Image (tube, rainbow, N blue to C red; front, side, top):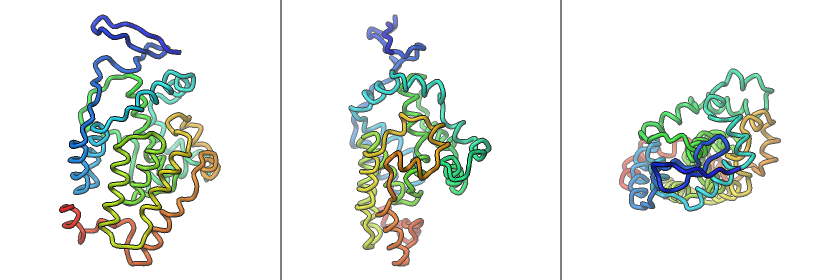
Length: 280
């Protein structure tokens, strides 16, 4: 149910949820489309792929017109109300590995813990990276939706089978675009893949891999709209079947070919290649 309330300090009415939380805080600045700024941060990201602050800047500079309709459709629905009540903030749920490990082996929860512990990651760590930008918190429904999109990123790696190697990250970005379209995902996913293909001379089918990821994202029901608690208790293979997520065949084929060619898929951007990377 949607409520419309007025704010004496602002001329426009404010849409709110049942509990009075505003859909979009009146002080929230409407983002401007700035492709040159996005391109600048993309070039900087190529120089240091570990500096994820550039990723957030790229998304800020490339707002998508479909974003607010997607937010409104979920957060003002019955499902949105339920999710906000049961999962107000995902990092404490996702980082509670002790509780997640109590679920049966073979579940999404165990696969998630294995992935995060192997990679030395945490949901709180991703939050800390985002907080480095110093952006103001508004406490509105847009913020809740945005946090939810951010905090399910590593869960997407687990569900899709894409690793944290350079190609795996491009695949997850394009899977995410299929879920929630934005030009930021397209830029990072396709331009990053083309750059990778140029950088590493190989017969590996990189573009087939990322296109498959893009199609998979479109076919998968939006994860942001699903109960993450309910998803975590499911058997991993069962969850993939329910979400229409197939085996990432072309991604696996790229890894096979690279290894056959003596290339480490997890070290594509090796030290010997850095001068070329920086000059790109």
